[in-house]
Length: 138
Image 1 (spheres, rainbow, N blue to C red):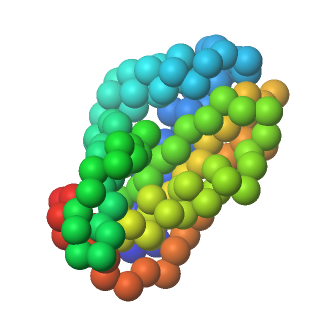
Image 2 (tube, rainbow, N blue to C red):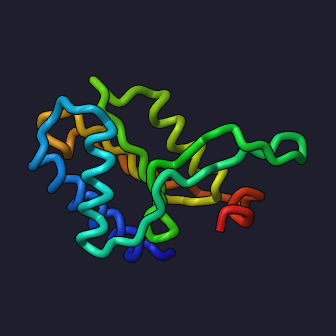
């Protein structure tokens, strides 16, 4: 994916998230935002997979440890959503780890529990080597 395609996809995701946030406001459970974001992206024709299983490969053995991406959008952007008091370093580490494991270079962390959604969005870009996981997930 080139930079323009990535920008277009992230812009579409953020637009859908803003719509959800404007309708619901902050202070709800993550599951509320998750369900509404899926509905909004579907309504906008944004292609995504939800709750995509992400196994761990440990010492050559593939293990299903119940890690799940909130969303993989357009086969290229990992989206993790939160409804937390603040984005913590562990939230960013989770996003970056999922991106590395899956071989995806672009990710969004969206925290809906903020007054202005733009204050709850983190965009991350990784420079990646080919991953064992990326071949097995696609």
